[in-house]
Length: 247
Ligand code: BEZ
Image 1 (cartoon, rainbow, N blue to C red):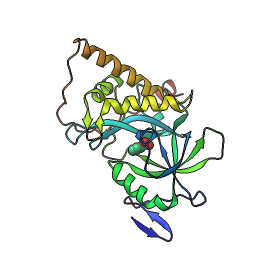
Image 2: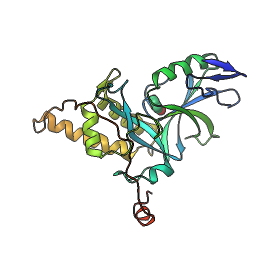
Image 3: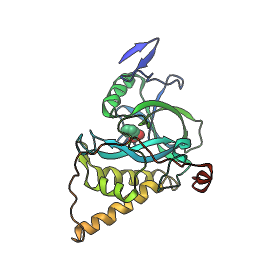
Image 4: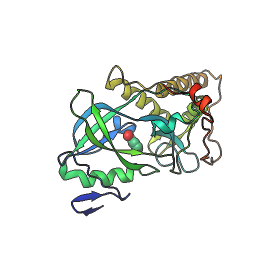
């Protein structure tokens, strides 16, 4: 971590200190919601817009391994997502999560910690965060696995995705726990903060696990190492786009 002209620069080369009157805020839409960064002194529930949350990022270091990557969430730019064929064809306008304010004296340490914790394909971006209490928007740092990163897997069949999550595990624990913790954490933020993509996957996971417990389904074993395709099915014509327009 270096300091250039008073701006702290992270390992990714991006400025790590946005300008909110000298404050540093980070937005969490995944594990950060229930697993806060160190040294925060304020935690606020709220949302960002212009994105869609999806379990479309492979995790080789937390909820999976390099040979059997799990699945974790990333944010997709809404306009790009609308151009893709996604079985979950609607998404809330607001991506709910939590913003954390980091004490000034710990900014460098926390930025370094997060660069290490979240590096697997994620890059640093900034986006306005809207506090649920109606106070003024805050510029927040956010980690996003963009479609260009090697771990981005793109649209997934929901049932296959739930099965994949059910059988995955990494150094940070079971992938199914990540999914269910996210569902619970989102439901606790506000009466309207649920995310149908997360809820549908959680419901599918619960059914899969009931079937495994009853002996109706086999305990899944890891599949051979996957190769991640970067060819996504896109909505191909204006007509089709209109038919499948996401709401
Ligand atoms: C999050 O919770 O927002 C998050 C955590 C790790 C990587 C990307 C996002």
